[in-house]
Image 1 (tube, rainbow, N blue to C red):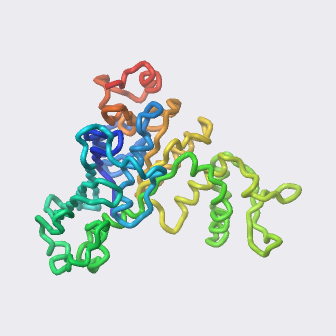
Image 2 (image 1 turned 90 degrees about the vertical axis):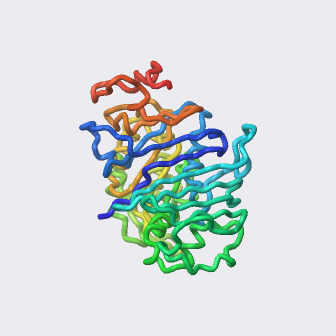
Length: 366
């Protein structure tokens, strides 16, 4: 199976990232433990740590900014203050590097707002496919024929539409396969935060999807694996709908009575058993509703999701451990950089090291 992964991300000029921040997911070591957190030499499961207000949520917004370019919803709770407030910052720059099988695709763009484009560039295996200047309204450079866009009429491209979306929506996909893989991957990227994880308004909808797609036994097994031993049953409601219930001496409606932790697990189940599984999922404050042991199990579950990438942001140092992950999958976000624990110290980190103790002692402060 061809592996599709984000391998590198750069952001500059966006909110608190006034200078360039680089997130390199290929800088991995030869650790012999927790090997399932790495797939094809790329971090597939990682945790990002940082103190309160250091910018973990902003980093999630930056990483998912590409969603707006491909017609997905944006993930900003606050759509104002797009650019950094530092004097001299006139635009935000983003760069994504993807690996699709044997192909490397680099997508760079510059904006002043969510859909206010200045420039876009795509390179496939080091060769520029297009370099488009939105202000001039023309292609500056690139081999358009290599992506089947050499006869594309650019006069119909509207302001606020990315070139990536315009190309992928107007040419046959087989003529620009690497671009379509980029487009599809970006459309499948998703993010959830602590407020979404406990959003009960979606519980009934998810339960309906479970029943409609015959996933009832999978959900029961999933919850059992996480220590929730309650038996569930699907029954018809007085209104004629089908709903989930806890099977007790009397039936108890599931949606109204499940715990906040169960709601969070239900959201995760839905993400990984839905028709469209996310290519990359960013979970902000993912452990907000889990006690330590359950949070460990959630990370183990993430590591088992082959062909998918999951990144979690947290300030719970209990999870900063080789028992759960490894130093090249544990990242520290500060106000000036984003670096893995493996690269944040000159110490040769081994499986037996107490990373949480080292973290609290300032070993990784760089």
